[in-house]
Image (tube, rainbow, N blue to C red; front, side, top):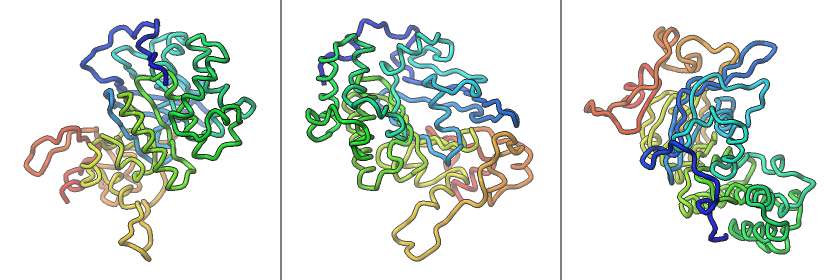
Length: 352
């Protein structure tokens, strides 16, 4: 990749940024979708932060609000019917939600990039991968077609696509699923952004290719010291790459923790259920565990804790009062750094 980085660009850094603050802060974000049946509250007060060089994994079942939160950050919500109903998204201290569309466009790709889960759908089938990779440089840096094609080859080589010079003019359908995902990673890295959001980057890939893609992503993130938000429902994918985890359910974050602490001792019944659902080699021949029931209808969220209809330890308190995301303490009463749980009975879950 060229030695010319984003820092050399004439585009100014966002005003108000703090060198000591988080790279990205999501504060009390609410996202709604207005439908004929009513208002679906897809994101309900989500807050999290990511530092430069840090990896945050956002976990949860389909429909938990993981991807919608990412779309709100990127400014690519389908509107209508979707809309941001409240909250702030601070990138280097500046609220993305108050920017004009032109300001968002200058940040999107240059400062914050996204890797989509379905590479075949995200890539345009009628243009070669080289043309699509080069578009980043033509649009944002004013390069010629010839120069942008050279950059496209460099990017393909950087993500280890074999015979990049010969394949730069091939079309998306001529690549395997793993190679297409590498192209999506290359596209996200093109302008060396400060933050990458990877939305289910290993979906539909076999286990070996999943590992290769995740290793490549972790290597490139470390090389460029980027912040990374990794959205997934697969706990096995994030165990070796994430620094901290936020678990989402029904549009809310129900637990946050450093990755190894969460795996060792979850403090929310939903997280505990997700961990129990992972297949284990020492349980061959046994039935796989599954959390009973289904996620709630976002048009009609239950009162109290949204997880209570599926929770084995729910009480009348859970059914009537929504628990806040609160600090978690150790057995000695000391607050555990980075640990939060939205459960009335987190002590029983954590220490039981």
